[in-house]
Length: 183
Image (cartoon, rainbow, N blue to C red; front, side):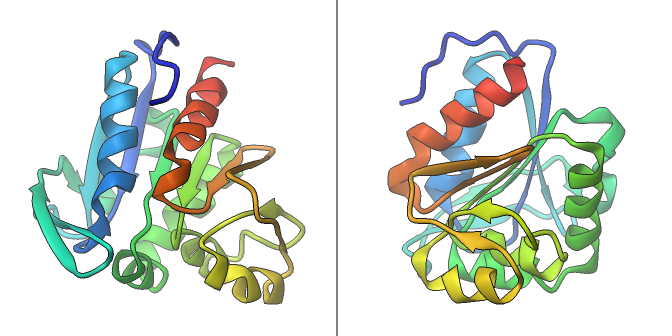
């Protein structure tokens, strides 16, 4: 688990996801950041609970949400988390509201933490050109074709962009996000 000593009591973090999000990639950051005192809210496209999964196809649990993607006010959050899961990421990358949201967060210079297949959304939103990031390895060609530099590391920080490869990197991912929120 990530170092839970950071005091994030004055921080607000939003997580966006759809059905078949990778369970650990949503719940681990959510729960760890809450333990550090952050207010963490989860949002879905229509405000309905999200069906989480393990390994893309094995349903795990329903995740309660706080509203819709359109309810996320970038001025009121300190960071945005985009978890992976192939199905989740494939749906997010074609969602115009999700694309606009990551563009707003990037433009505001706030931490944008994206893991596994989540960087597909960054590609669709036009946010990877000239950036160094990581993801699930199969996304490397997409990132490179969009002008980004893909590397195989547990966590990559490029300015406000924090990326990781898979659930095995969650400790590094959450730690990097906590550090960014502590600055």
